[in-house]
Length: 141
Image (cartoon, rainbow, N blue to C red; front, side, top):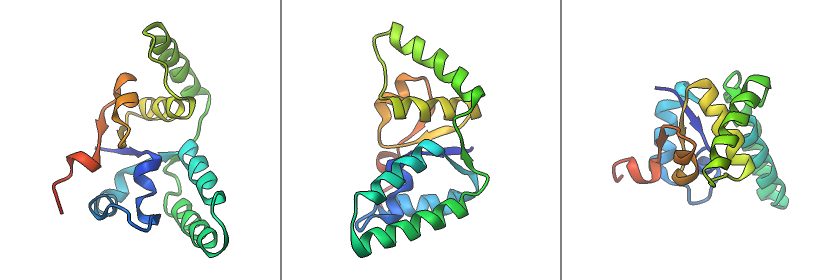
């Protein structure tokens, strides 16, 4: 199975008190893990909210992450845009629209046939995606 890591999951290794089970899972699954350029944008914004040495350390971590994910960061392109438009219209008709960044991430996962790995199950399940919540579904460490 291949995975699309959401921001709350892919950022665990950079957190001072990140979930060790999730970090170990990412390490085991790393060759089957993808992410979205939107997730990278959210992480880059998070880095910019920090100051001094913490910001420098997080920026170095983000640079290493991007290098390690080379070829496995999916952009928002025309094919994803069409999936997003269909998904957005379906959710709108159901009165269940998603936050825009999450809807872009969902469309990316859907377009590439990936299971979304996130703690934010509700929005992504509404979009009809396969969801794995490592915070709940991994065995206790």
